[in-house]
Length: 272
Image 1: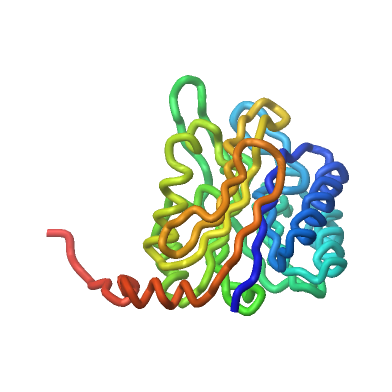
Image 2: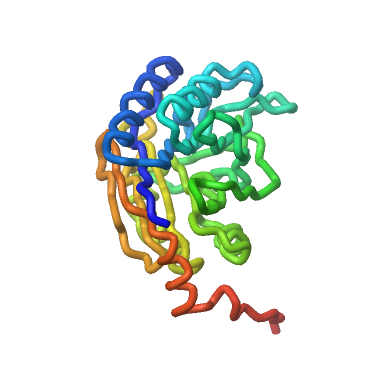
């Protein structure tokens, strides 16, 4: 089966209502272009930053104003919708960076809490401590999507190949990597890592990203990507707000894995 997938590229703000209006406008554009699956970036509804820390607008899941609005959006258009993530309050007072896969009737098909947190020092004054405000998840998640399956992840997870290998060996067709990648690391690594995850696992990668300058001054790389199982870039969102759309042909997954069956060739080994 083939279908069209879309990535929404945007600059989130601390104003949830503003971001939801942006998502609604971009989703309508994606649907006009034939998308049956629409993916939004990490922290797609409510985000502030300060001094290298992220401050998502967060509520308990049952009280989050963004979730029912996004469920209604999926239902309105009859599409699968990936809320790349929103902030959900955690038990320890921090926030869960949580993805939601929504069915065409608006029901939640799967949840995923970001496992790997962005605590790094890049030099030149670029230091980030995501764990100061965000609590990590501990479970990978696979969801139905259109008529295939998709492995969920978020942003910094991209650098941990074992997560995606687990998904590939579970037979998923697609990998979701919504992000708010920094401009510095994005320029250096984004395209290479996204294509590598596709190639290693013979899967499509759907990677919607934040772009532009966030509140607080953090700069995001943009360049939302849709990449096929052979590592070919099917669509690139560039640096500005917008929508990218590409055709997903699930037969390409089986074809690619048949040509290079590396998912079946792994061997146990020891470090001498």
